[in-house]
Image (cartoon, rainbow, N blue to C red; front, side):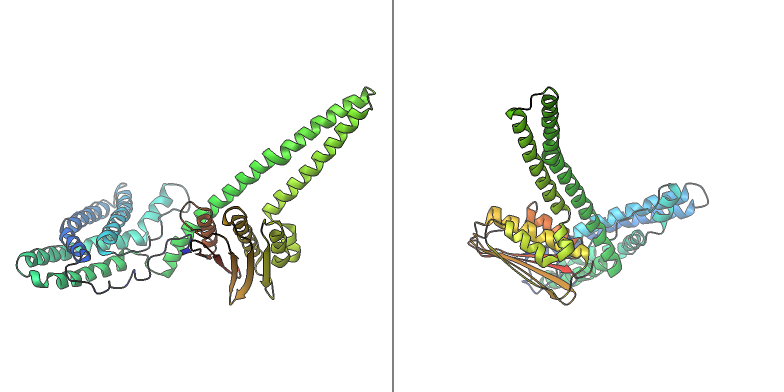
Length: 390
């Protein structure tokens, strides 16, 4: 199982579908798509013509350009619906184009960003040129259903392939850069959510742990001070001071644990080998650590690798029922490879909503990858891949 933060298109998204029986379910879906081309393309053509007529025709007034800009935003919406129709009936999975956004606030920036949106203009072009094609495909398929039905499956396949090409050419990201921008837009949301969750965790740990202990410590020391001022230097005061000393040690330990959860000092000072050995020592099962790195990766990547292994070993402790576990790190080209394995019960899945899914999303935000191999009965092997440089 491979889990990523983004949702890439299938490998054959841009390829023609494989050979299949003539009258399969996929063929009937293609026929349905071709028959619905006419009403869909008619609506799209009328929308674009009205948009261009009003927008360009009224461009000499104050309402012309805003009408055109609003209409172009509507073209994006129509394109999203058309991608959904193609996905459902033609099996064409295309990446979502770069989301529309303005860089600064205000009416003029919004207007300018809308008018120069290349995705919206490509969507408008798609619907503008589709009407003749929609009429042709509707007519050919309808006639073939009653007159030339023996060749209908092959005819539908050929026409549907032309539709696939148009969808891929005009409704998908225009180039690799645009596709990458769309991925980064999605990854940014994952990073923001992860940072917000970490801040909430730190606040909760401070409030419920060290802060509560320090408040109790202050109260105990205050009572001890009052007794000393009253001349009550007896065993009660000594016990209160001893308890306060214990609370100080516990608070310090909790603060150390919290600091380790933010960024451990041992990782900064001694690198991944020592830091991961420290993590392994705290695991409830014996863990063998093997780090084969001639140099250190980027500091940000080191931190991600550390917390990745930490989370995976926590899963081993809590859920695996394993007797032993192992951690390996090595460099492969410009990638940092991490593998965590255990001999537990297996059955781990990176399904949506699990800890592994969240980990995969965080790795994907830095162009990383998470692969989970965990058959029922075990063993479990989780392999993570990170860029060597952030």
